[in-house]
Image (tube, rainbow over all chains, first blue to last red; front, side, top):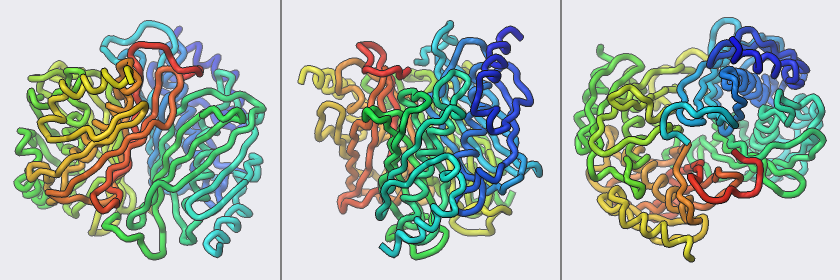
Length: 140
Length: 140
Length: 140
Length: 140
């Protein structure tokens, strides 16, 4: 529980998520779930939601999951596969789960789904802990 | 030149870039350069620019570069390595160049720099052409 | 079952896996498990198993999982995070599971573990079906 | 110059490269070029070179480039896009160049080409220095 407090304090300072109406629905050790409604200002030149906002939503869930253990962690690397388009006004949910940790490195998977449950994007992020005790393993 | 017209028409419809003040500085076959000033609303819970916006800027440059040949192309996959933080009010420039194409697949590299020239993030995107003639090669 | 036959026929022709002693332990729709003992010839300049062989093992499991549905599929993109080193003579197991499919694109996750269960590497691959009926969705 | 010596000593211990006949053609600060002939034992179930060996060749070039500065560096993350198939007996060349460094993190691009110059695969790797002085920047 104590380890979760920094993450909720983090949300209070998270101007990006609050400006975009991204809500933190659930938070636990190594996991987070966030929700965003696609605004009209999030469309790309093809008329569907800009991939940058899909990434941003997933990246936000990743940030909360990777900071859920207490010591501050930052993103080092992330990748996303876009599987389906999403439209303005759709509500999207990003669910982040911890895949594994070694040393100061953590790997997190985030799935972005539309309300019907269809997967819009699969994201994977790699974080590094800035302080605190490394997890067992020769990881870097 | 003609191949560039669809890309500039694309910018007129690009609500995301225009809302965020992302400018299209340069556009040519297989390349694009875009510019964004980090707004106060783009901060993350740690106080620097949200990684989602760094990705979004790079992804936008990738979209214009991959659509510069004429036939519409969409992003399939993208990855980013975050090398340095950037702060509110900094101006960031994303430069996209084509790495290669085969079949309907294209690979594009985007470097995001701050005004001093320091690299903030390195992005690589993979696009797929939705129509038009595939480039020579057994690519998919 | 019928959909699995092409995959086992594929193993008979898989000179790489048979030469390296990589065994196909389990195979089902969208999943595969493979096993490899680290040979003395697989060491890198630092004295542990070469990352290329860790990737190769994961990539092999990915190939069987993505071909398990029948229509031939090939790898388009793959990424790997190295979490722990592994030594000569260790036995490694790679477990591939399907993350999702849309259109002709599939996403597969592969975890490589040592005998103790510790995770050595996390791999994610994106495949494209060369023929057959696309899965529901505007995927490419 | 001195910084290159550890890398050549590394080659003497590199059982993988020497066993597979992978040659180190060129080595300099932040770059390396390696060469491999596709052996009959490197075929996959589809009859072309196994993607694992394409990755391995690129990963080897990445390792030498990222160790060329002196302090030992190891791979943390790597990704590859497969653009064209390659056949048994073809000679492949992997050229690694440094994309950038910050803190202990380095980013390297490797292009794998066949003799005709056609690109077979584009690889990007992220390394971490295990010791030595970090490069200027708040990188992690």
